[in-house]
Image (cartoon, rainbow, N blue to C red):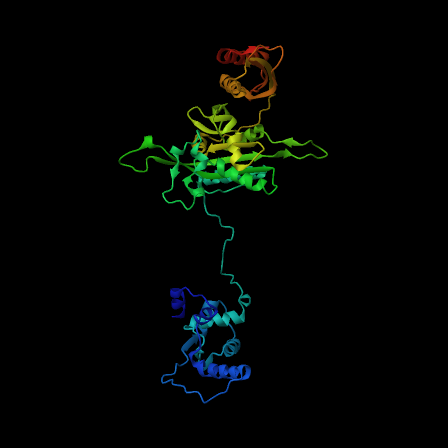
Length: 465
């Protein structure tokens, strides 16, 4: 009653806290005498008469039957009877009668929490000591049990461990975000956002379409606290609305949800020390991490295309696509996107559609092959091409020209300047060839290189320097 009344009136006092846990009804006379004595001694009062106690039906001490076998079964150990009697005596629980393996007890009226034999056993065990009860040999447990996870979760853990080993920290941001981030955004228009009918605040007004802004908030928070060199990654859902998908038979057809992974890099890559000079992070570092993720997932680089990506998110950006659809993008975050967060330094950002990566991963098969015993052969070409052609196009054409013998295509020099026609640049490209069954002959090598050169000339209008 005390607890209910205090809650109803919204009063949480020391008195309610004390008496809602119970009081001894048989202690009233003693308490009155004690109060009268304190009034007399401290306040100078006088006692006018004796106490009149109207108590027609006194509350008797509750009876509880305690069984030794049941106590041993619950505790897991037989506590000596002498110890049990001593503990009961210290708890002011009167042993009214003892017959064989049972004790008839009288519980003090102030112990309103003790109503059953298990309550008495709990009190005895508390005094006896939990540490004095040994663990039975029959009790077996596996503390290293791990809940089975699906394939998608296992790959997510794999990539998380890889990024963490490369100096990244995982962040987790709210899926609810500010409406202002999307109001003047072309890449993620506000019309495609999923708004909340009753948002808790303006900062939590809509569901996010991209992981970008949450990561920028984390970067700004850390930089304001002098953590300047940052590498973050996040797995999270993004939400979209498309009115063109509206269907009468399915009210949810207009809404979609995708699982993405985002990467952020800003600050210095290495600090100045006795062995190396200071080095700033770059978009090429980010690209390397993206490529490592794709390799870790077993996605064949021959099926990927890196192409320029122009939007208002990046000042310089690239799109990553397979033969069928884009799977992500990366680049340097545009200054106007960084400005609301007061981030003055460059931020390099990548976002990949994890759901599409999983579908690409399902197509891949793992093959184990013996390391080739035959030597690899390296050839170089100096190509004169248009300035708007990225190296990824050269790499893709070369790999498609020779799928068996060509192992690697790498760029080791770029020249733009004097002695070149206007609108042209020079790429120095290395091609690594190897046959896993025999040593390559000059004739085979020349044939492959001639085929690659012809395809580059035909598709890119490339010229040899």
